[in-house]
Length: 234
View 1 (cartoon, helix red, strand yellow):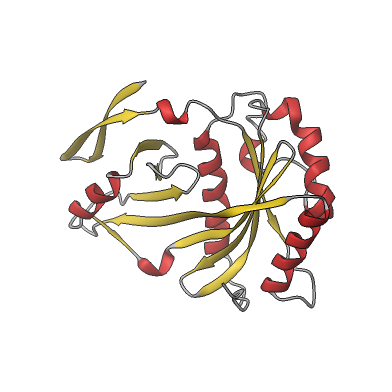
View 2 (tube, rainbow, N blue to C red; view 1 turned 60 degrees about the vertical axis):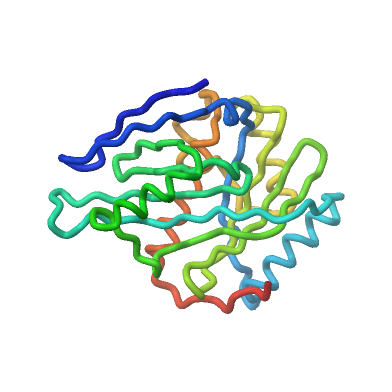
């Protein structure tokens, strides 16, 4: 249904959003994990290794996906300083997720991007920190698998794998099956649920939980100081 949200952006700025959340009502459980680059392999070789393992299991490639994040920072004269992470997911092409530094996530339509541009004097983005996970989507039985090459600017940062189990909406009820499936092509890289989900395993899953997981990984990549690995060819 439609929800009206009044959000205080800064002490003197308010805006009202009419959010139509009906297109997000159907959700399934997703688990997102980083795949470590095997020693002696490039990022491209590691990506191809995962794809070959999936295809050996019978997975069928079905298009590509992208999850991107651009972070906006409040003007220097604003105290305390604030930040807003604007996230897009091709699984929800008409939706924009705004993840605040307080942990709150606003769900709006894609026109929210234009609002951020109009607030240029209040919030500005640093293009160098824009980060995305992009790659092929695979379908196998009741699973949807996305193998994403993570890049920040021109630099390759690593590999994220998102697995969506379509019949399930409560993580604890299907985690054992999810782990078994993940280990079937990722090996020991997967031991337990993602950190974000560990305290939410008995709750109903929703698309915001996917956004929160990606944001957790993106922040880890941003903090990493390792030398970038050569980017996979597109």
